[in-house]
View 1 (cartoon, rainbow, N blue to C red):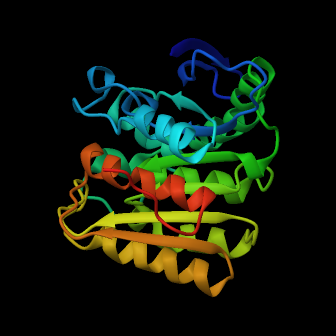
View 2 (view 1 turned 120 degrees about the vertical axis):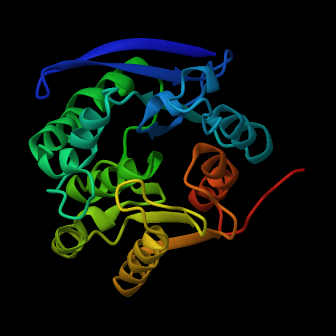
Length: 264
């Protein structure tokens, strides 16, 4: 079942929408929590920005039925507009983009949102639901620009999330600043799942290979710094929710196991 909330973020000074996916029967169950950025693309095709979600509910159900792992899904909708989302999910000034509007991004918006996620959204969820209240049982997912925010959150706030799913991470928009931040904020208890598809093209740069280059750079950086990581590459993967849906179970398995579990 789904439950819906509107929550005011004091630092950001705006209201956001949250959708929570949970089973009808939940007595005496303590849940892990999986937070989704770009939350309107998490559960329902009809609500998603491009007519296709990652259909995360089926993966959460699989984790419960086949793996015995109980996950509460928390989808945080983005601000809606293109530049609003850019501001919300860009922790650094964008330097490489063909879109002039993107080069004028306001990083304070992202920093305020991250602060509110940690200090308002997480406490709201943990006071309302029977969930574990430690970073080992909190996970966060983001794709594209939101993937940069997901990783940033985990390292900026060490007691937030230990597990990150970063799909098609767009760190090429501010590569040097991003990797400098990671180097200065290393946390060896983090576990980072990375994904990219070989057919992805950046809308902002009109180039192929950017997500591959950044995915490999992140993978190598984390391996060199003793941070547990896994990289999944889709040979025919495009930059969309359908591709991320196909790899999402790999992320779930990365959290709980070292092997891959599928049932066809």
